[in-house]
Image (tube, rainbow, N blue to C red):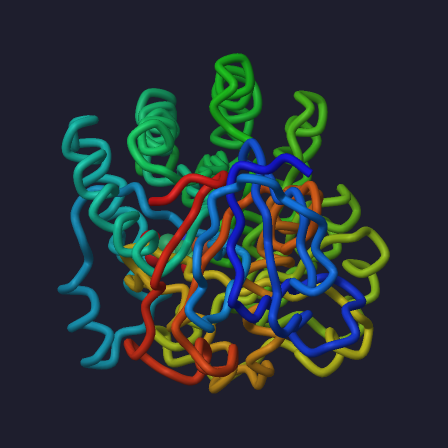
Length: 404
Ligand code: DI6
Ligand code: FE
C-alpha cells in the first residue's frame, strides 16, 4: 500500500462512533497518511506493508483527531474589560446590553476598525487556539450589523484561512443585535438582512451557514424564522443561539429547519430534546459563557445523554460573555460545570464539533478516508485533556497531513 508517511508507537483515540473501547482506544496503533487523508488506521500488528513510507515515532503518546472549535466570534474590534468590572460590581449582562453596552460597544469598535487591525487581533486569538491543537474553527460575523462591516468580518475570516494552516468555517450572524440606526425597528432590520445582506453574502460565497441570536435581548422566534427561510432559499444551512438566558422555543425552530446545531441551550426543556435528536441537530454546549455570566441554570445534560443527542463543546470566544481562547478549558468547564464525562468532552471537540459544522463525514474521527488533521499528545490517558488546566500542550499537530 502506497502512503506518504505513517506514525507508529502510539495509542490512538479514534473517537469513532460505535467504537467498543472508550475514546475508540487502539493500543499499539498505527496511522498512515496519503495525500492529506488517513489512508489506514488500526493496530500495528494488522497493518499492511507500506513499502518505503516515511515513519514517525509517536514516542508512546496518544494520537487524537485535530480539535474542532465549532462556535467562535473571534473577529472583533476592541475589548470589554470595563464591562467585566461593571458586572463584578453587580450589573447584569442584560442590563449592560440594554444600556447600549455589550454587543453594541463591540459593534462600534468593529465598525471603526480597519481590515488590517481586525486581521491582526483575530490572528492573535486564533493563534492561541491553534497552539492547543485546534485544526478547524468556526468564525461568526455579527459585530458589523451593516452591509459593509458584516462583509468585512467574513472577508477577514477568509483571510485567516489563507494565512494559517487551519480549516475555517464562516457563519453569517447578521441577526446578532439590533444596530442603533434601527432602534425600535427590528422588523425593518430583519427585512434589510433578508433582502440586502444575506443575498450578498451568499452571492460572494462568504458564509457556510447562517446563525441568529434568538433571545429577549436579541431576536424573536418569528424574526429567526424569516432569516432561516431566506437562508434556506439561498441554500445555506442554519444554526441558532437559543435558550441561553431564557426559553423562547428557538431550538425547536432550528430543528424545524433541520439546522446544523442549536447552541447554548441552558433553558432548553427536556421535552424539546427529542426535536433536535429527530432532525440530526447537534447540541453545542458553551460553558465559558455560563461561567463568565455566573449562570446557574444548566442545560439538560442527562436528558440529552439519554436521548443520544450529539453534544459538541466549544469556546464561544467573544469579547463579552466568553473572552476565552481555550478549547481545553472549555472541555474542563463542560465537565466541572455541566457534568460531562471527559470522554464526552473530547467527543464534543472532535466528532460532534465536526458534525455541528456539517463536516462529520470528513473530520473529527481517526477513520480511513477522513482528513489527516491530527494531534499527538504526551499523556497517559485522554481524560487528562479535560482534567488539567494549562498542563498539557500538543507535541505535534498535522493539518491535512502537513506538519504545522
Ligand atoms: N451569545 C453569546 O454568547 C455571544 N453572542 C451571543 O449571541 C455574546 C456576544 C457578546 O457579548 O459580544
Ligand atoms: Fe456565541
